[in-house]
Image 1 (cartoon, rainbow, N blue to C red):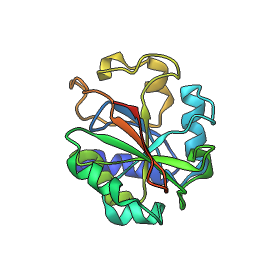
Image 2: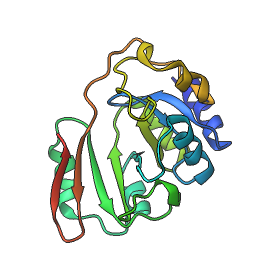
Image 3: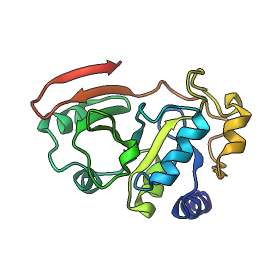
Length: 186
């Protein structure tokens, strides 16, 4: 695993994009602070830049670097969630503009999955995470189901968990600064 973390980190550090296993489905990722790398993912997925993507983080320090104000309910939801949960929070900062939604929000998920967690430790920055599919096509549940155009379009494919069948995509909950809670995907 350490070699894969090193290889992925080297590619990301140079502005590249990777295909990697997450705590849910296979993802396409890059440094969330690098607008050129984020643009490469939009292009590869054939996705409009108006459709935002989420970022993965590995702890409170990284969360507060991106969001100045985090509603208390966000921590409560993360504490009680039994499965991976993405929270959409308002007013992100210190990330690429082209990853922020039109309403000035950003989806974030704290990960515990060992590869992602350790890669984030090494990066010290959030990692873009978007499903490994062309926009509009089904989300692949296994590496073997990923479109060859995606595999050939990234700069590095992580050689871990390629035989694993993915779980469900994460639950998505939008939290606003005025404490409104809206479930986007269960």
